[in-house]
Length: 121
Image 1 (cartoon, rainbow, N blue to C red):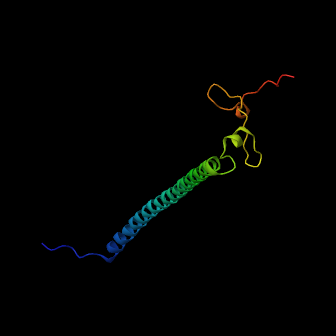
Image 2 (image 1 turned 135 degrees about the vertical axis):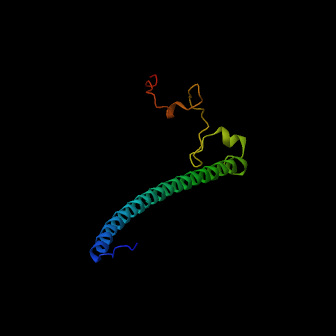
């Protein structure tokens, strides 16, 4: 048996259908690429925020350690090295020899957020 000869019109119809399928596949691929791009942009934005927060935290720790070092230096060899200097207030060193009233947790009352009653007259 021999197969019937192929008609040129049948070949063109099959090719046209295939072009439609390729278009759908290309659109699906583009949508997937777009979703991946949006996810990448959001991930980079979040990473930059986290890196900024970590740098800010590290800077705060460094500044705190520098302040503690400066305070220890003042207590050991600076303006507050002697016991007499520690007993007297020193505005130049931003030091007050007066003990502040504090809450039971040890937080000075002047830093408390609760309203205080006025001092007695």
